[in-house]
Amino acid sequence: MGTVIRIALPLTMWLAAFSAVYGLNGWLCTTGVSSATARTLVAAAVLLAIAMQAGLIWWLRRSDWAEAGPVLRHVALTLGVVALIGTVWSLVPGLMLSRCM
Image 1 (cartoon, helix red, strand yellow):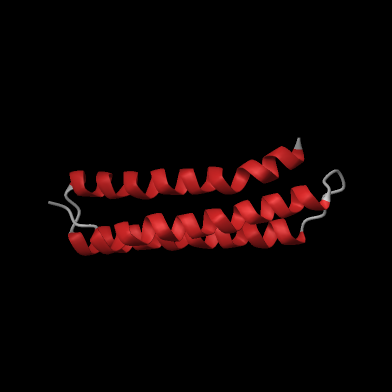
Image 2: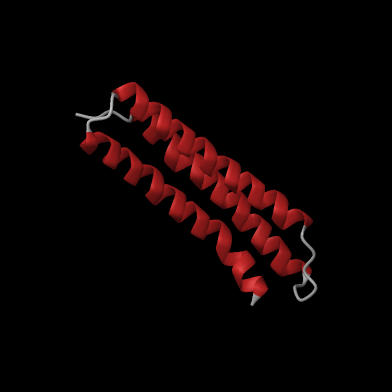
């Protein structure tokens, strides 16, 4: 079961971060928060998401998997890198283009 969680965790974290950051952006726009405050909070959320994905890669590289073979470890680590790239690819443009109408 631990192997399945290690394989599913990177993309699940990307999905959660994507939903949270864009949800935060929408919520900040509807509450009437100033544009500078909204950008700061969204930037902090984006940086936190990137840091969490990088931390997950670090954890996947150092963790001991007694039940997993080298192929499953490689798959999990590859998915971690893909999720980090996906996080940067999907969240950074939204940060640069974020503007409440």
